[in-house]
Every structure is written in structure tokens, then in C-alpha cells.
Amino acid sequence: MGTKFKVKANTQVADYKGKSYYFCCASCHKPFEKNPEKYIK
Image 1 (cartoon, rainbow, N blue to C red):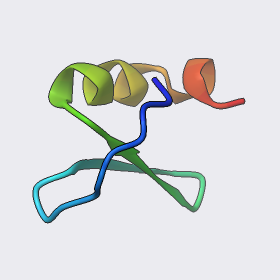
Image 2 (image 1 turned 30 degrees about the vertical axis):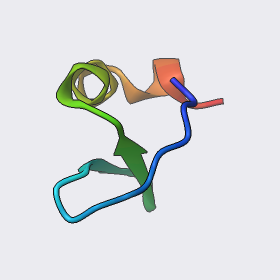
Image 3 (image 1 turned 135 degrees about the vertical axis):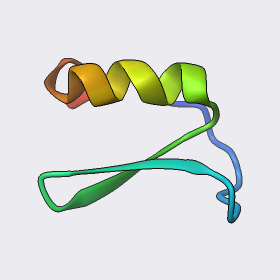
């Protein structure tokens, strides 16, 4: 995680505690959805 990429219309996104988090692919998005606190610093 932490890779820079361009956000497009089909970019994976999750909203958590009032903030939007964008993901390069579903394989990064799914673990975040299951346990977001693990990935937030």
C-alpha cells in the first residue's frame, strides 16, 4: 500500500470515519474493508 496512481471513475474507494481511501485494485480494497484500523496510521 502507499503506491501513487491516478484516480479514475472506476477506482476502488472506501469511506471510513469521514475520509475517502482510494485503492489501485480490489485485492488492496478488500483487506481494508475487512479491517480498516489495521491500515490507517
